[in-house]
Image 1 (cartoon, rainbow, N blue to C red):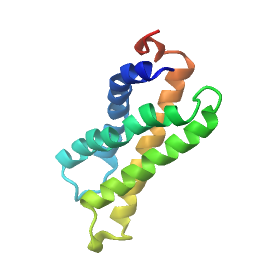
Image 2 (cartoon, helix red, strand yellow):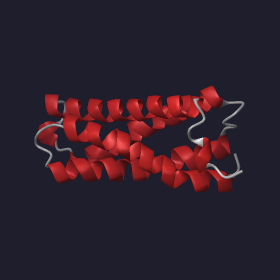
Image 3 (tube, rainbow, N blue to C red):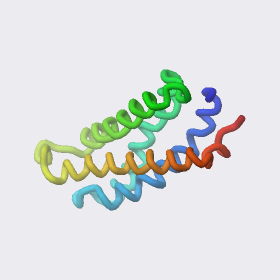
Length: 134
């Protein structure tokens, strides 16, 4: 895909991703996070990582011929970066290595895995093709 096609797809993919991941974060993040933080985390974390996954990494990897490598890098980068961002923003020494910290980080990983999996299903059936200009 061309950079123009990737940029055109970005808002649709971002919307899809936050629609999948935000409900997971709302339910899964530990209780001490207010509801507004949970919702905004769904928007913010994806906003930080999604452009790299959709715009930058496809410029490094041929996402057709190196699809497996691209997916391995992209789908490792996104949850690791989001966990780090979330911890830097909302973590504390008191919560380090506690049940709530691990719950938050695992929730972020699960949200990413779910959006990746559902995205792969939609991609397999060509349902994203309508959002990519020819």
